Length: 287
Image: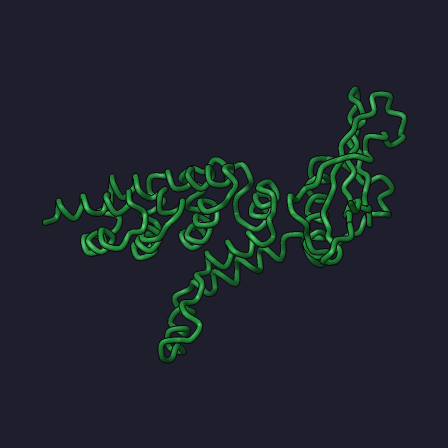
């Protein structure tokens, strides 16, 4: 079996009076596969109680930051992001001249650009232009929604939850703790457009940690009322964790949230049985 080979790595040290020196090693690694080269980022930690100034041998081991193989570009982005995180925690690169400094472009600029593009697609002006340019029935079927494009892109990259939260906290007007434990102030800071884009990403993610974060945002009393009723109804019609997460909200406040016509329609077309039952209960009340 092919072994991982280190392509480039950086050793960082955190020193504090009265405490052992703490070392971290972040490295871009590669191995040969039948399909070509595969990449990842390996991180190792170690302590030196003697404060000898020598790198501990344990830095030769470590864990991979991504559970899947990455392309070289993806691994470079991940390594850059990890170095920035370690430096923010107080680590300094041993032999600072070895570090590559990226002054012109931040590690998460690609994520900011992706989100900005999808926000532009979701704007009323963009939707109107797309509708005006549509002809016939369209051979390509329905276009993916901005939230779906963002989710599919992030699914392809397979970022660890911590890395995704780090990236989002870098490009959004919220720090990581606010993303994890939102309150009304954070909801106002995020805004309805970003909320509509991120809820499907969080609630549809395979990570339980990110789904829990999505549920916390969804549990904010006014969160769903910040969104267009048509958007919420569209989510409620579909399958999956997003629709299932909406069931209690439709049960409690479906009429105010969606309106009578949408509830009648939802009772006919909802793919999740509990959602269909909740809408049917409201429909029966309205008869």
